[in-house]
Length: 77
Image 1 (cartoon, helix red, strand yellow):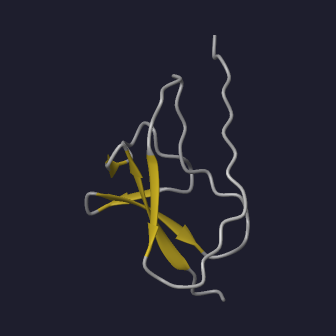
Image 2 (cartoon, one colour; image 1 turned 120 degrees about the horizontal axis):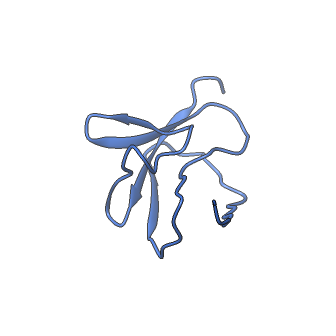
């Protein structure tokens, strides 16, 4: 399906901030949106700090399936 769907991303109950939004996140209308058009890994968040956060993904269209979530931590010097 080439039409895809949109996933809304929230971090601690609020849209992702521009400095934390990954390459696949669009910030529009006060929301952080991930357009999903194909099966692949999507880059949702980036940060240069380690923190405990609650990440919420919401989708209104049926049929979307997520199989893996990867979290990577590294120290930038």
